[in-house]
Image 1 (cartoon, rainbow, N blue to C red):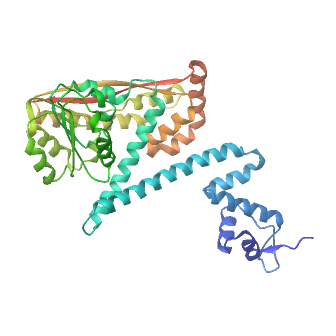
Image 2: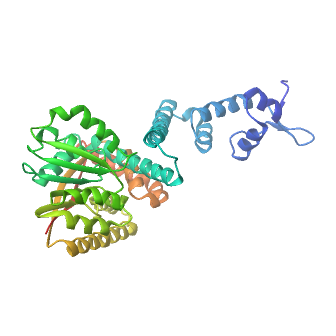
Image 3: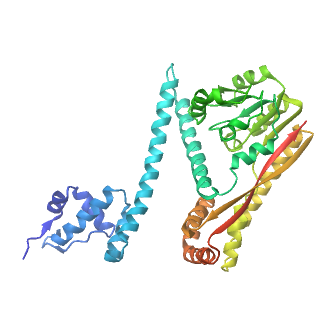
Amino acid sequence: MDKKMTSGEIAKKAGVSQKAVRLYDEKGLLKPTDYSEGNYRLYDKAALQVLEKIVALKQIGFLLEEIRDNLIAGEAVDIEEALRLQLKVMEEKRYQIDKVIDSINRTLERKDTKLDWDDVAEMVQSISLDIRSDEGHWDALQHTGSEVDWYVKIFNSLGIKENEKVLDLGCGFSKLWRNNWNKIPRGTIVYGFDIHGSWADDFAKFISDNKDTLPEGVDILLEFEDLETEEAWDKINKEEDYSLIVAHYLDYELKDPETLIMRVSQVLSKDGMFSYNGPSVSSWNTFYKNALEDIGIKASFIDEKIAGQAAEEANCEEMLKKYFGRIEAIMLPCNWHYNDADELIQKMKKFFPDQEKFINCKKDKLKEYFERIIENDGEIVVETESKFWHCFK
C-alpha cells in the first residue's frame, strides 16, 4: 500500500503552503483521503494529482469556485471551451493592466512638479472613463459594423458649414473628427478641450501625424484643461462667439453639468448651435423588457429604470431651456446585430449590474428565447435611438 502523505508533505510536493491545502479542503476542492490516529489529514497519490490540477488552473487565472465546478464535472467539462473562456477573461485583465500602465506613464511624463494625491485621483478617474469608453467602442464595432459609422451619423447631423468656429468640449479620442477627417468643411477651426491622461493625448499625436491631410484652411487646436476650472474657461472666453459647440458623452464626467451649460450659452454666437447628449431613456430597456415578457417574466426593475432615466431626461431638458431660447431633440437610429445569445445576456448584466443574480436565475430561459429567434431569423436586430439636443439662442 502506498504511503499516505501529510498535509505538509503533499503541500511541499505541489509547491504550495499547508495553509493553501487547508483552504482547498474548506472550499470543497481537495478532501483528505484519510485521517491519522491523531486526526491529521492524510492524502494519497490521486489527491496529489487533484492538487496539481488545482495549482495549474489557479496559475492560469481560474477562481476557486470555477476550479471546484471543473473538478465536480470531471471528464464532462469541455476543456477547450473552458480554456477559451478563461483566455477571454485573462485578455480582459491584461487590457486593464495595460490601461493602468499607460495612464501612469502619461501622468509621470507630463508632470514637471511634485505629484500629489489629486493627480492620482484624476488618473484613476481617467482610467475608469477610458475603460468604459473602450468597452462601448468595441461593442459597437462588433455589432454595428454593417451600419453607417455612428460618428459619421453624428457629424452629418451637425450640418457643419465652411469657416465654422467649433468648440469641442471633452473631445477625447475624437472619432467625430477622425472618422470624418476629409469631410470637415474648408476653413473650419476646431478648438478641442480635454485633460491630459485621457484619449485626447492620442488625438494630439493623430493631429500631428495627419495635419497635412486636412482640407484647405482646416485647423484643430487642442488645450489640456479641466473644463470645470476657471483656467479652462479663461482660455475658451478669449475666442468668444463659437458658431458650433459640441459636448458629447460628457455629462457623466461632470460634477456640475449646469455650470458648463451656462458657460456654453455665454460663448455661443447669436446664430450658433450647441449639440449636447445628456441623459435619456435607453432603447435597450424596451428590448430586454419585451424579451422577459415574451418568456412570461415581469421585471419591475426595468420599469423603475425607465422611470428614473425619464426623470433625468426631463430635468436635463428643463435645464437646457433655462439657457437657450429654442431646443430641438434629434433622434439618431442605430441597429445592433447579434447572432450569439450569450453576448446579449452578458450585455444585459452590464446594463442592469444590480440584477445579475436575477439574470443568472433566468439565464437558461433567456438563452433559449434568444437562440430560437437567431435560428429562425439568422440574427437578432436591436433597433435603438439616441437623443441629441440641438440648442439655439
